[in-house]
Length: 158
Image 1: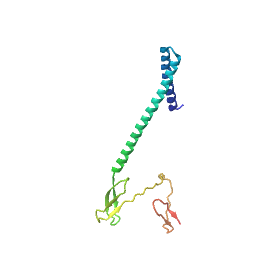
Image 2: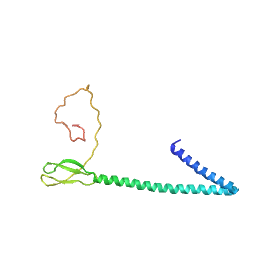
Image 3: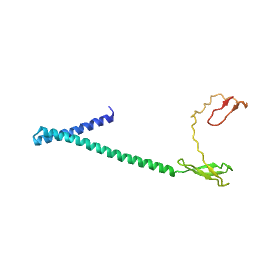
Image 4: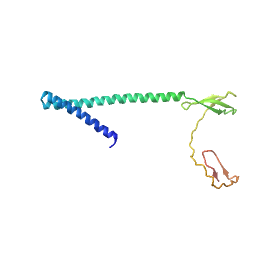
């Protein structure tokens, strides 16, 4: 049985035990079985209502806390700027630019004063294993039929 189910059964037994104990006590004090049963039922309903209201309030507090955490992370990400060195699109001069992942990035070249826009693109690559030293190495012919287009595409033989 999972811990959640055990906790659920334990809480049900506790609620029923409190209601039965108080109902029995009230029945013995007033020497009436009907008063004892009535008090037990009233306490049972009251405990479920109080538990329901308490769980709603706890959920509301947790929702507010979660929203505060999300807002804090988003504000921190907006303020975070990573310095990166980029080449100017016009004069190819190196510029140190603060880069943000949350907004558009642009800069003016320190050399030619031309406006540049930063275009970010993310891609995945294959994870490879190092070759062992016992692999046979072959010479590659420099034929014009062999070309490599970009880092994302494999070598194509045509």
